[in-house]
Image 1 (cartoon, rainbow, N blue to C red):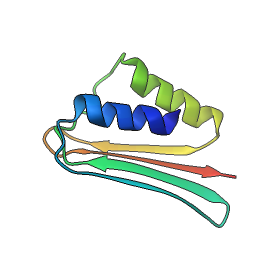
Image 2 (image 1 turned 45 degrees about the horizontal axis):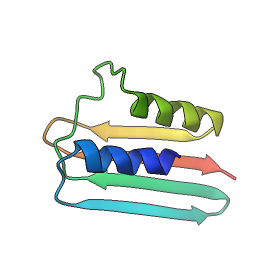
Image 3 (image 1 turned 90 degrees about the vertical axis):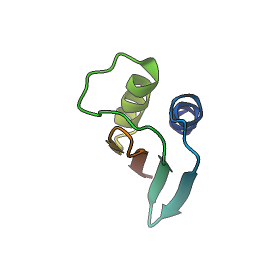
Length: 84
């Protein structure tokens, strides 16, 4: 569901012309990265959007490490690491 929400946000909100998705497992760690060259957003700004909230809640439930790197006009990159 995290992956689905990340891709949905990319398609629905980013206005990107390029995206990269990496999903792999190495040494017992699942790694997911979804990045784009879209409009980005201010990650410091409070958001009540359910998609972002759901991604964060699900990552917490999995005891994963979630990083969001985004800035206006600089694109967005989500990174999730989960120990299996």
